[in-house]
Image (tube, rainbow, N blue to C red):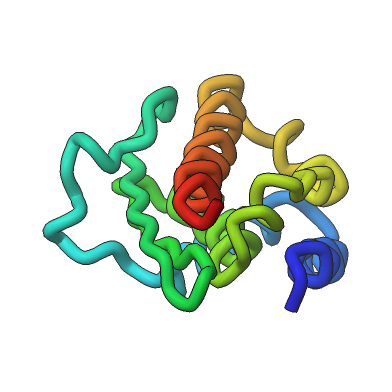
Length: 140
């Protein structure tokens, strides 16, 4: 599946809910299904700077695709990173770099987050793209 296909699926899923309480509950459920980071990667080097909560992300290359795992100590934040990993994991680095994240606005996520969580969301996206840039450089 392409990044755009996955984003469209997420938009469809979020459109099924009538209010934001249901969407938050759904995000918490998504967080529970997150491919968890191995404890050995829960280090300061893998913490995303700019997040109020602790969010660890690990990336590795498998068959020219970036595979992400993550965890967070906060349930909403864990749901947010789960959505981003669903979109970007198992994708080619160039596709991650070139991808827009308009789906976040389309599902209304940013406007329903506190300013600190919204900043954290931006930091998460930046970090995932930085991993992709690093791996893309290795491929060139």
